[in-house]
Image (tube, rainbow, N blue to C red; front, side):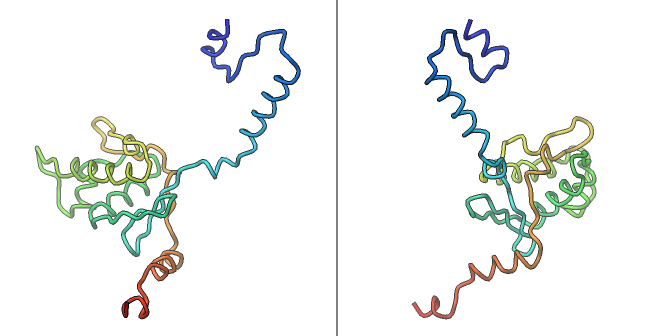
Length: 165
């Protein structure tokens, strides 16, 4: 009975009679879970154009190539719509796509790998059959404003005192 209840989508299943203290403890546990702000649990990947880097929730940075940054920008600008392989080739690789050309696929594979290093799913960039590629969840990304990115870069730049050590 309990397994059937959980299999149908219930988060919890209580069999009667239930002790009062257990019921109160279960309700308090649900309230604790619900009171956590969703933003605190949500993965975010920040895009810093000035440094061409991805910045994860923990602050770790991954450098992108010019082509990877251009491909990511193009996919993000499409905002959940598919972008053709031809268009990605022209924008990111600065050349037309040729028959049997796998360069765009390799570029997307490398970009996926770098995004998964920051906790994203390997399916963050989906292949849209006969259409190209699409960002599965554009809300995962936040583009840093130029001023904020410059401040972050200054904070990590070595100072004159660091150079003398």
